[in-house]
Image (cartoon, rainbow, N blue to C red; front, top):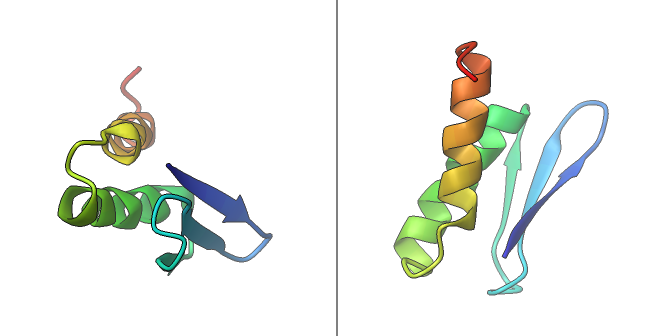
Amino acid sequence: MIRLDFTQESVVIVCETCRVWHGFAFDKLEAWERAAAHEARTHPESEQARKAFASARASAAGTP
């Protein structure tokens, strides 16, 4: 499972499955994109981050 930790300036991406992989982004969409890429490479059986990225991308585009 991947979670995002937000600050006022950035987002830290934490893979709780690996416990060794962390990422960094400046906004939510970029964070989910990086998380989805990690998930696809390392945990292809999981879809949590890829679904969250698709939802964030749709929201950013103004699509419900």
